[in-house]
Image (cartoon, rainbow, N blue to C red):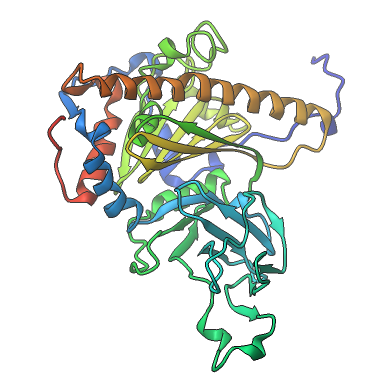
Length: 405
């Protein structure tokens, strides 16, 4: 008998049975062998250093992918309800996101159509019915329509309909707001995967709430920032005193099941001493026994944990500069002290692990590659998802590798 005398109201609500996942996720998890039975593949994969430090290579990525293909802007939970307004500058381009009264998300360039002044400067969610320029008070609806111009009678032959906010092609699915940062680009979102969208919905991204947020600024190429979340090779080494075997004992030296949906990658792995028989327990919290990671093309990572989900968006602004927006999502907002304590501790731990370990390692790798010490980067069988990820980038860019500089 348990000696825990706390009530249900004192405990955080979390946990998901296997049946809550998509059919595709369930099939992948059921195909997992026990962790001790998995052997990593033997591969021969390299990428030249120029792919990470060359300004020319970054400029082609920027022009081909980050300006003309769908990229993640925010999780839907960061724009939680009709009337939400959010300024965003992570990609180095001033953006303005709104959710109109019908619940539709919009992504605009954050520039007044009078003289180009930024409409909103602070990157924090506002609850407004309209947006007014602080310079001359031109006012816009949350759908981008220009609805108010002070002293409009002094403008000859002016029609407010001719000066709406510049809206970018955008699409909301799977709990993420996607956009194409070129306002003249075709609204082609065919790179998004229906299967991945379904998976993310089953994980709860469309209904969970934002508990915590932090912006990291990293002196590293964006792909180097993505790499740690495409492999488990580093976990027992880099995280030896945090989430490795001498710390919280969350992970072992595990080989994940890697699957691709177009350029998107899903990695599923058992946690700790996972064995398949755990799946036969209908009341088990599957999130405590299996970790699911999505590497969403081109620059977003979604990672499940037992009672929260991490969403990271890696936003490059130069070949060696990357902003990372980290979001911690929970099923509900904490409504009791025990839940708040648990979520706050988790948020602090994950910021420390990612910020002071993963992101720091990415920055040191970039500095090392800049020295010219090595001609290329080698990938082991414990990192097989990384070259798959790069193949997706190279396919979309229509280019092969560049020579190391």
